[in-house]
Image (cartoon, rainbow, N blue to C red):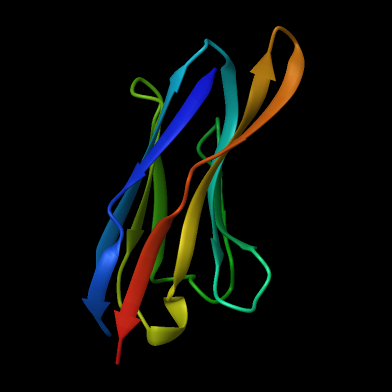
Length: 119
């Protein structure tokens, strides 16, 4: 069993910052890439940022220049530093980890953490 434990969400004023963390634990598996998604009320879940094992990253256009994704391969943890937050960033943020376990692809999701940005 694999668990993804997220932390760091909360309420912040526009222009402020938050840092999300997501730690993977449990059954041994090989992590290929880690990412963050978000879902606002009434909207589809969208990918915010992703980082692959080699360190390459990609971001949604709406967060480029404001958000930074990073990972600690020793701790199996992915972070999302969010700066210059806007009210439109308000959403539930989900951690996503993809990899292989006994040569089979696996895909895990965190429980979600609420981020609320007030104007």
